[in-house]
Length: 459
Image 1 (tube, rainbow, N blue to C red):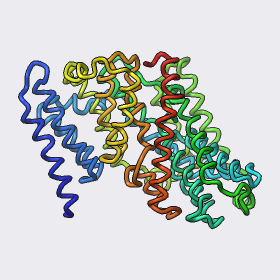
Image 2: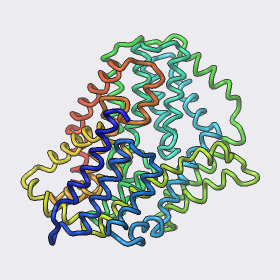
Image 3: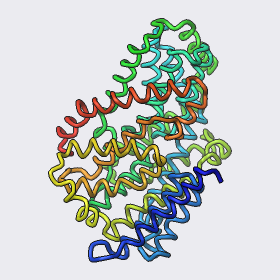
Image 4: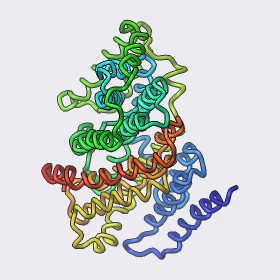
């Protein structure tokens, strides 16, 4: 092992031991201590990438039972209490099937043909196309935008140029920042489940990410425009229009598979939008409709490309992280956090608390993966927010997760690591524009996001 790995293992072992040495009392009960020991130890293994996600996901519920936090039925309740896990799997299959159909690539290239050679229009076209693709794939098609943006850079020989950097800034926004405001099953599962630790009656709806974080969509376009002004690229990009028109022409006419994918996507959205009318579980749509891609006569997706590529290890990890909120609520961690920590925040203005949630997220992003953050912090932050009177238990973690796209180094987010690996920019350039983008986002949080949350009555 390297010295860094040794330090990570030592930290992962010492932190739960320190928690275990804290004496129990009427508030900090034996069950709460067992819950914290198991959660901190196992998620440290994930955060420091000491074990694969599959093994971490298998270990967490077992630790809850062994240490006495909850019985087996409580530790595995997330598997038996709802179809939420099946929805997450179905969402991944749905995104893979759309990708295999060719529909997502066609959308991006078609939008690119509308830029008319203007570089600013090209950037905005890539943004619109990327966000559209992310929306219809429920945030599952992040790789599509990364690959297509890199394809534009490569085809036009824009590596290590300000134009190439601007195009990859767009790819970063689409693949990472959009996870805050585009509905996806993972957020519903992890954020909503965590918020229930503070408010068991809370239910996260599909539209909440779009409505609550709507200003963040505006912020992304503002960021692209600001960087366009800062970098001062060529206004007309030579060969840009020809590239999109050539690539789009190679696709030929819309295929039968793409038409079928459009129909099935419309069916899925209709199911979601009409859920208040038919009142069927939202999860059913993500379980049943992806199966239609494989039926005889439809045959849009194949086992090799749309099923075998689903990361089942990540599914198990997500399920265990979802269980954190359920187990935490069962042992009473929410009221305990409020009892101990809320008095320390007494008198803290709500906007300051939410801003500190973002800063905390930026720090945690250096130390752990966004997946681990989504598993560990929605519940505790919901409890703290509730303690100082924030109306929605979802808002504190929503603020923290803004840091998903606010990084210093590529390793802080797997999507960005892929993007940086294309070699379009140096580490110096990556850090430079991300620090500037971080500052812009923090300022616009005060200017746009907080007033919007107050207007909606969420704070």
